Image 1 (cartoon, rainbow, N blue to C red):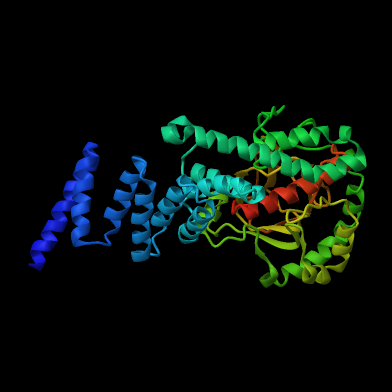
Image 2 (image 1 turned 90 degrees about the vertical axis):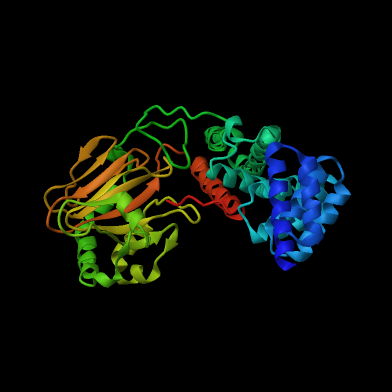
Amino acid sequence: MKNELHQHSVDHRERARSGLRRGDQAVAEQAYEHLLETLPNDLEALQQLASINLGRGDVNRAIELLAIAHRAHPQDPFTLHQLGSARMTNGDTQQAVADLRRGLELKPEMFLARLRLGILLDQLGETHEALIATFNALNTAQAKGRWLSDDTTAPELRDVVKRAMQYVLEGQTSLFNGVLEPLRQRYGASELVRVEQCLAIYLGAQKATLPDSRQQPKFLYFPGVPSQPYYPRERFPWLAELEANATMIREELRVVLSQPQDLESFLQTDSPQDAADLLRSSGVQQPAWDAYFFHRHGERYEEHAARCPQTAALLDTLPLARVREHSPETLYSVLRPGTHILPHRGVTNTRLVTHLPLIVPPDCALRVGGVVHEWKEGRCVTFDDTYLHEAWNNSSETRVVLIVDSWNPDLSEAEQAAVADLVGAIGDFNRASEVPVPKG
């Protein structure tokens, strides 16, 4: 008898699936109803019958079936998504939000569920949370190759997705313009025109027109400033003080190098693939790019500063770019023998990178935008790392430079303040949206 019931269940399920494949919902519905007579908590049957009922407008029956499914399978996220969607159709907004949130706790990558959550939160007047949910939904979908165009979006969702994109654009524009408003009051609106263009480019509302095709910022492009791989020394009066102290800085460096356990990988990753994507060896040794940070993503390394007090004190006098959780970034950059840092790009042209070469053996160089620069000990070089750039040490000795990042001198005081506030706000928003926050 048991085997016979099992076979009947198998037969009903196959007949139901066959009906769905053929588009014959009547056959599918009848077969799934028979399947529930034997297996009243069958998840597939309950979900498919709910979809069929929802499709013909019987929302209450769909909710009833999904409620049974949820009681029998409380950890199934797709049931909660369906249940939330059905209650959304039925106008039960509060309960729909609760169902969708619970489903997303179980399976956060359900981007359609999160998009629906965003719509509901907006209806409830929770506009900031709605913006975050919608932004997350779009980013999650697009990371999976969906919702990038009409071709990657289901026809029935195309208008919804386009409205969501416009909703995010308007919401982010309003949010970030609010961040800039105190600076408009302080400096005057005319001082922030380029910042507003920068924001529009970041949000995709305006196309970036880069003067030099070699330049491609990964995160934030600031328009209206000259594009050049290397910057002339006269733009940075403070380089003279840095170079005058090269001997002192080098002496403190040598103490650090005598205790290599205090160095760490610049890449700060445990992934061999990440290292292989950026580092290559020209010899038998494994490539290694180590660092001794004074600042990393804006955080000051107090112990390191205490061990190199004169260098740290000098760095404190420099006009470093200061952006919460991003910069300054200052360090001894230690490139081991035979290591080649492969071509890569930085995140923004609002700040520039300066190298003070401290230990430079032969056959070491930097290439920015296709232009090679050979380091000379004690002689600074400043460049825009949004150009494709690479560096190599083909010698049998270690190469060390002090790296310092500073504001692009073509930004005004008002623009520097605005970029700092804007990037901080973008980071806060992305983090709340569970979207990776660009560093650098």
